[in-house]
Image (cartoon, rainbow, N blue to C red; front, top):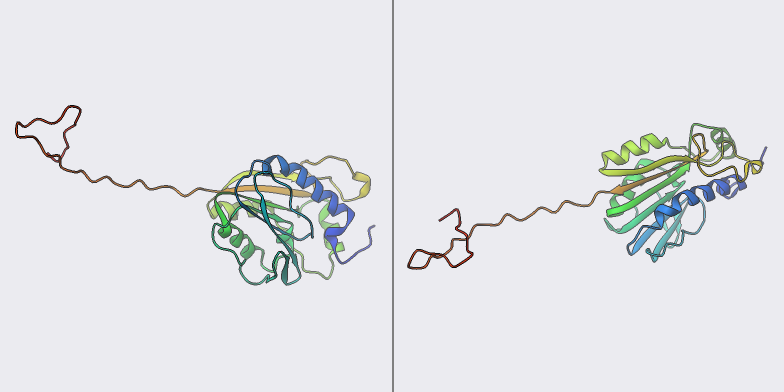
Length: 227
């Protein structure tokens, strides 16, 4: 049994799970491009290095406040403009957010059309769940069901691109190297994309064509229906 500590996300099993999730996500993240990306994490870690996304804003949710590149209250909306980020990565943060649904709605709001939303977390059904709640006793924690997150994002108009379980069957150092993806993995990754806004074509108003005195149009000109 692992002794309980204050920061479950700094424990060896969670670090292994985070690494497994990152390895699964990197091929998808490498294809993201734009100017701005946002990482909100329950673990105080660094964002992935992406060649086509040069500017990251990093937030660490700790208690009732976001810390990192700025300080803000977790009970208030994220202090960013709508459609501000081409990539929003929520790393286990829904497990510790005061209101997970509000944070998820806010993430959709600040995601640019065509941008990618990535969620990672621990699966509530499996061998990791009892260990997680035992380690987090006395702290507000709530594991999220991936299919419910998928449903919420689809209702918000996002298109699902990937959802799968990741990591080993049980937490423990003895399972190191057991693989990154599996049907009963302890974690999950979810990738969704915000649909681009449809461009409404302008309706072209017919313009009457002046006819020559002989009643003929110039070569190649077609008669307007209004004539």
